[in-house]
Image (cartoon, rainbow, N blue to C red; front, side, top):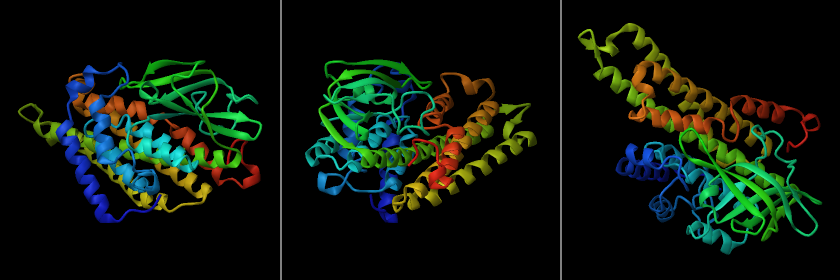
Length: 374
């Protein structure tokens, strides 16, 4: 992916912001929680028409060839209407296809929204530091055997990209969602969006890549998507801060706005400081992410950004609920939608402890890194 000029990013931010303002509907989000696939066909069509699904794909395959900065702006903007699903899961799968140098026709079909792949790589709750040694296997007759968990986008997927251990090392293989021997069970996150659990005893359609190429593709895609998730968290932080400030101005007790009470002013000021620190960390590192070819530097940068945004989102969630009082946890209040979305995102692709452990893995000398690290 390439870096994007500032004017393009401004136009993209404006387009996503207008989309969020038009489509923000808390009642609609509440109505479709704990349902499949977790989004409407209209949302997917809009993303394809706007070119957002093609942001991370190469231009020769019909993509936009833009960087992580552009994808981050889309994810951050979609926080305003709570509809970043299915964008995040599809961005992750698209980056795998691009990194693996997948078939141009396959990438073009993805860019148009004709196929919807989902990456199935995780096998346990804390997997980010040992992802290159999966228990799922690809046998000599090209049969996949194993189990995958926490598969984002599984409910609407037409294909799965599965990581598996093969005779050549790590393999990334593509199989159809309706393949014989593949079964899917769905669980729901705090915000009501589904995550799939896959049981595999199926033959893949295509082996995308194996060995070091597969390791590099998987690691790069996860690092990039982790930063894009951080951007969505930043969007929710900004939205929660706006709701809190409005609440402090309009909620009255003892005949005056509660924002006039010094104790609440201090808490709001602390929240503002953390918000600005998170914004600085995210914005200063996004453009660097686009130009990084070194896997170690990219992994350390991604871990640093994601850990900061995880921590900030948790802090703002906690303080927002406190400043709203009992209203902050009522389902009718839109603050609760941001809270539940943050709770769903913070642990996906690595919570703060995992990110810091990953950072230390990457900072260690090459020969001293734990098994499964690139």
